[in-house]
Image (tube, rainbow, N blue to C red):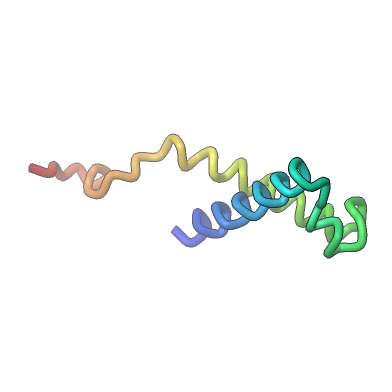
Length: 74
């Protein structure tokens, strides 16, 4: 599903940003948006947070092919 891939990409970007904050004290989103409290930065942070919540659903989905159709693999 395309929404899964978008959410995963945003979560990875958010994780990399937090990694750079932890390792280098550099917030790329804040740098690109002119500060961490600007409206654009807050929208980006919110989208990353929402995408992380969406990715939690990926943990509980049955992603094995054919299992949702009731078919068995031999």
